[in-house]
Each structure stands twice: as structure tokens, then as C-alpha cells.
Image 1: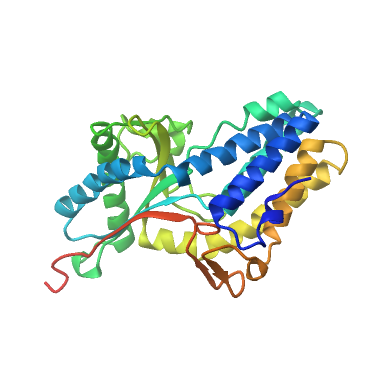
Image 2: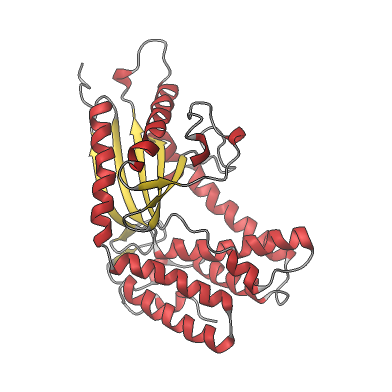
Length: 326
């Protein structure tokens, strides 16, 4: 079985790794008539296209930047960062195989049998976040009035921004996508017209403690999907370096092991291959790999200049709150 790990030790660039991995995977899939690996190959081609043809990002980033400029004028007292990234190769590969495990596991629990390859492949058309932007806001303490709570005030501004963004970006060629979330799970702070577009993990945090607002847009100019996440600084800290990050990783591994316990090795080939690829990546010693523009002393001390592990940066903007001395 071919896996991404086989291509991480030759000093190649991320793009060359993708080209080799996808070509070999396609060749093997055709030889073995494996529909899942063909779908996997097509997924990798999407990432290759993003890395090879980046002209559309100039237009997209410029239109996204207009919302950043709007925020600097509308909220001069807020500090915020505005970042964009293409999902990292390792995280994309983990997510693809994780979707396979989850679908087969849930299907087996519901039906007492395994789905066929066509059913699994049909479930893999769900990636909307290969390109993602993140807005992180912070309200300096000096702008918090007596009797007000800093966290509550930041969340008010977060929802205020969330209510403006869909209409603002739709005027610039983006179309907001339905989230699939029940309206009961969304905060009343999101207007009724916008509620159907957001996945509200602020009101309803994930089991890991992760909190954020997520919305997906289709860029009609670039003809691709992009995700926007909105968080306060505290929420971002929890997601990136806090309990949500560590606990989420541990919980994901525990859930994968429980799926393996329910579906013994040898009963479902698609599950076996996805599980093996996923476990190999989760057990990867980043300090031992050799990828161009990537260096790690261990799995925490990482300098990722190529988007292998942390994602490839598109744009960074930072707005510092004005009037902090007042």
C-alpha cells in the first residue's frame, strides 16, 4: 500500500512530493481497480492545482482584504489579525483518511454491514476548507467600561462582524454556503438571515472546548470554496496552544482506536488502508523527515516554510487598536 510517509525522506519540495505521490497512487489504483484511491488521487490534484496556479489568490485576497479595511474603519478600537492559508499537506491527508474511517464506522453502526466503494467515494466530496481565512479579534482592556465583562464584549463584536460579513463578501463575488447546522444550535446574536450559513462553535463548543464561528463561501471568480473562521484571542489561544489543541489530538487518536476495535483488521479493505495511512501520519517523527524548506527538532519545535505541517500562508494582516493610551 502506498502512503504519504513513503515520500517524506528525499529532500523534495511539497509540490514534488504531491506529484510523485498522486501519480503512483493513480497507477496503483488503476491496476487494482480501487475507486477510493482514485478519489484520493483527485483530492491530491486539487491541492496541486492550488500550489501550481496561485494567480486566483491575488484576486481573492484583494477582495478579502477589502473586508479587513472595512474593519479597520468600523472598529478602530479593536486589535485583530487577519490570516489566510492553504491547508497543510499532512493535515489534508489526515482529514481525507479520517473522513473514510468516520463514514465506514457510522455506516456499519447504522446498518450492520460495510458500505461499498461507490458509497464511500460519494461521501468524500465534502472538502470546503483547503483555503481558509481566520479573523482573530481582541478588545484592549482600556476600552472596557466599568461593569462590563471583557469576554462578553469581545463576543458581541465577534457576532457583529459575523452578521456583516456574508452580505459584504457576496457583493464582491462570494456566495455563502448553507452550513447544515440546526438553527437551534446557533446563537440568537446571529441574525435570522445569516444563521443558516454559520457553524456556531461559540454558543455550542466542540467536546474539546474548541470555540469559533465558521462560514464557507464559494468564490464565483476563482471557482473554489473557502472557509472563514472568526474567533476572539482567547478562543484562538485555546485552539492553537491550549487544551482544545492537545485534548483534541488525544481524543482523535482515542476515537480512531475505538473505530479499529469495532471493525477488525481484514473485514473492510478501505477502512484498513485509511486507518494505516492515518496512524502512520499521527506517529510520524517530524524531526526525522527531509522535506525542502521544512525543519523540526521535535514535534513541537517546527520551522515550516513550505506548508507541509502548519499550512501555507496566503496573507497576514494585523491591525493594532488605536487610542490605547486614552
